[in-house]
Figure (cartoon, rainbow, N blue to C red):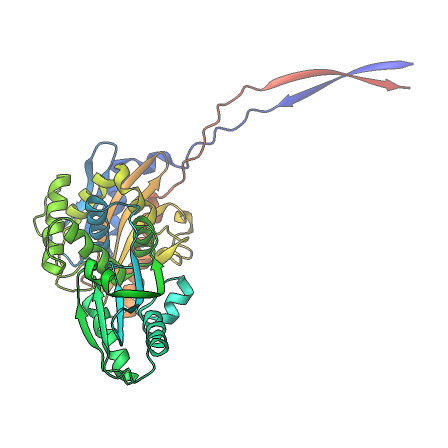
Length: 399
């Protein structure tokens, strides 16, 4: 005998996955979080600003107009200047030649900022180095001249003074009293005979990304000077300072309080304000010209100088903070962007009045991480709630 049974299958409502505690991420609560946590003695009277890009309004500020030491946060200014006055796809070529004159070499440069001073570092990174040029050029000079090369001439164009000094010192060390003669690019071409080697740098935008991600001081200094020259200013610190002021003015950012002594942030005499840095970050965020800059900022717990941050201090913020670090003795800065659910905030924290101990700096960095961890949250998809549904099915049984 067959019996029919009724089975009711319930499909329960799909939960509504909204960002966790979204209300805690609104500007009022974010301000309260910063107010409470930046009072920590670990930060020793920091300069702070938080901006809501949706409205452009300042969510929170503390000593935000006080001139402070930026450390490597200044690299944001250098990258902004480079992308303002130079082409992002620009490359630089350096080549070495045996000269047409007896006992001569020619180095045709282009002020390549990618050129490394260390051969071991260059090999690891696939870069050309000054030592590579030196060794290959010396070997070629010997091969091209049967007699003594003790008194030789090296013609060069568009090389940094530091590189020229290193080349001269190398040849003297190897028994060659090289006379270094600067010439124009056109003259360098005329004086060149047989090629020895040639090197092309990556595109400017790639070099900038590297400089920001890993906080490369020499690379940043040289790129900033190239930007200064492109802007019509001298290829030195004074030119860089003038360029930075002009860049800020062009973006509508007040340069009051800006003092520039170098381009990398190594000088303790540099000064910026948190408000100024915050406004600069706000202006460049959605300007396509500065996309390589934004893309080059380290990501918390993932890349570059932030790769070890947040992992133990605020793991919920991993991947959600994109910012530039700034470190000197007694200084632990961070400036950039933090994702907070369906929002993103611009933040600048300049803690430059710390005790000059590694413990104080480590404590300050951990405190900054935890502050950002309180507001960092991913943007989760929101699924609509579906009503419970009853499905009636027949089940055949046999007795």
